Image (cartoon, rainbow, N blue to C red):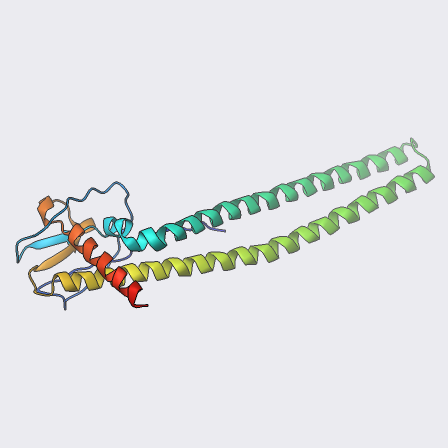
Length: 225
């Protein structure tokens, strides 16, 4: 079962000459990003936003993202523990089977050397057969368990993946609407994603302005429901 990476923000919002010109790309989360608060940027400037910072600082993340992150972490821990349990049981059964094979080989050798009577050899052979049948039954049961529980884990993983996608879609929608509102008067010629910016004047960072608008729209959407 592969592990799930949560909160890979997939959005690059860019507005050239206004809110009608848009493009999309990718960005990844970074907890170490520092963003300066900016109240106003001169009209006509090329500015940028840090989408990771906005996501992790937003009310959307606080109210929905953190709980989903906890669910994913719990699922990953359960998945690892479950698979380790399967592996231990399989190893234990394999060890029992190997010992059974060794005991059967020794019994055959002892009988060939005349070290055991035919009656005793038959009795021991029946005991070994019974143990063999038990090992086979437990192995079959384990395989059935792995298959059924494995399917449940896959379904749970898919459901969490869908929840994650919905969360990312919500964030992209909120950010797009926030950018459109903030730049409704076309004051900015271009709005870049911070991941594409090599060097810049920190005063061109409008992340806090967009974050404030994202939170306002998020609260308005929730109150309207």
